[in-house]
Length: 512
Image 1 (tube, rainbow, N blue to C red):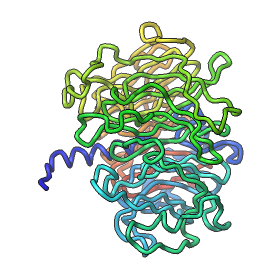
Image 2 (cartoon, rainbow, N blue to C red):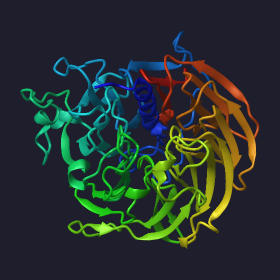
Image 3 (cartoon, rainbow, N blue to C red):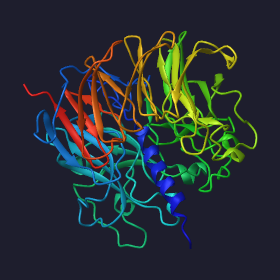
Image 4 (tube, rainbow, N blue to C red):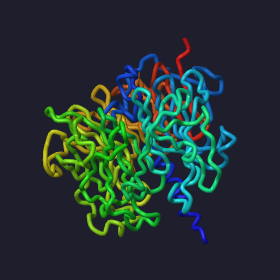
């Protein structure tokens, strides 16, 4: 079979981008037993943290303010999540930490927060077949969500897994008992479960149960609200980008956190309108006493659905009830959308970052597909208190971005910080969309900025990491060159800043 290496390279780079929806999350320091640790602020998805005492500078070469750093292999583009004394991050198997597991795998590492040593790991063999079914060498892209001793994560095989944060150290909890064959590649003799292996509580296979077809590497940050798990399915177009492979599969679902049972799905018939994939994860907020689920759909439209009650039937699958929808680009093509593939002047738009709920508004980045679409992009501010089709009257303001943005906004003290693929970090007024300043990064930024401790932390694909003062006046505190490109958002937890590059995870702590 002949290989078009140009297309192969573009697809590989695109996969790196997908993983950086890993634009990765921020962790608050609130009590871990009461709050779920996830990508972005609880429910709203705002990329902020209330941590204090974080460093203004660090130096990996001298070790200044570096608590520890560890290898995460190669092709790592995931967000670290910190909870219960553990650091969880998606990786690949390039380091082969367990001699039983040879070659390419998807991996979720569970590290000890104190020193970065390995506590346990989830090892997921690749789907056998064509590379686009499970892209080679890409680590598990999805950041996990943690509540108490339960970890919820989407794997490279489009399985939603519930794991025990303690691994096998407290026994093999059920009802799932098939960890041995789950980590064993097809055709090999099953491995014995050890204390270094993950403990799977339950599993939900979206490919099998929903008939969905992920595009390239799946990515979803699971939103937890009470007993309900909300996530995007990553259903997308085929490898040719010419049509949606699984037209009837949903793009948004809800599972019961205790059993993994499907309890709700969308009824929007997204399939024919998917230009690329369903990669944006949902957020949640309360508007006028009603709890709403916000979803940036794969069709360039932001939706608000009624959130599920905690007493929703766990036996019968519900359909999400739509409250409003807002088309971010009503002039974009709506028919025969795949005819606009590679059209950089006219095309549909899509989302990669998450919608952020802030003061009864939704802030979201949107634009022509980064590889296959037009070069227009915007940060949109939408009134979340409306109902119906609010396309004509729901927009509060719109701010142009350069090329595209895959970022989730960070909103603090009335200012929005957001990156784009034109190498920019923007500081924008959250009330009216006016620009205060922009800062030039060395390369495109496929991650989000983190605002914490009155500072803005951000990295780019140029391996450059920046620390700036928060505020209307731009003031750069430091710029640090790291070992490899940065595709994820920094995370703050328990006084420590975590930065993930393609190859390493750094824990940065202010020296006393």
